Picture (cartoon, rainbow over the protein chains, first blue to last red):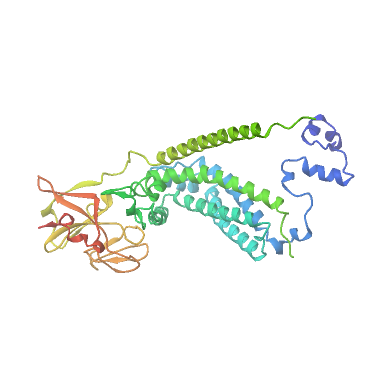
Length: 257
Length: 171
């Protein structure tokens, strides 16, 4: 039955190697190379690469957790409205009234988990010296991914719109206000002035552009929502593409020397 | 077999190419830079849907001697304090990281719930991580004798601005 199905035009149109039993090494390689999802993986890997004790699989776990976050995040967006009037109530609703009330908690737990796995992955890469040439550029890409992970964590923090969220973002965004030159409370901001006219003030500085207002309010909630759901995932995916591609191009997983 | 072009002609061509190449890239960079500037400006709205920065706070006799009034705390983020000789408006923004402290009448102090900074009724910090006193806002009387508080003008003690006559009302 299955063998017959493998001979159909339908099957052969999708899997171009056809259903013929794999006899040669070349055929085996082609199965991987001719599939867009499989070809992301190397055709062969060194023995140490599959050792959990060596990699902890932390990079792979980070990506898996990111996929879980993407799926649950999309599901949460069906119920969550990013306005001061509805945000908190919608989050409570997702727990009490929406079927499968764990969805928001799964997203939250995985968010915590992703920060942990990304740090552990970085720790592993550091301890095995995998940042050394020829992988030094991928280490830098990884640092950007770490920063993006933390920015995603930070922007998601505001969305429940409870006291913890509002005050945490108030504290966090006040740090942006202390940025040198472009923060109103930061050093050097008074240098950017002509006479009495200050160009960097509380309605024109780095903190303001982050919050879309002078305090954590409607503008900040909407900005953080768009950053969290659209802008930052978009950017982090681009960096992830480069990161994964460079693993292959830099000679695969590093090995003990 | 083709004969090579004379040297002079070739270098003229190269020069023209490089010229237009440079002009092209400069134009491209200028357009991209222009768009980037527009996008940056786009992120700064012209109209803010936030409460007004100045408000009327009633007559001076509505505030008792030694009182710390929380009347405008929620709406405008201001405490109005009256001491022996003057009335002043304190910002309810902790100078550590921007949380809102609470007023404790029994202990006669402001205490921030976030990291425990404490302030006297004057606004001067005495405990916790806050690095400087609370800020005071501009306070004045209008023609009808009503108190007007203007939050766009701030007075900081560490800059010696609390002696500015705009920062308090003599009563």
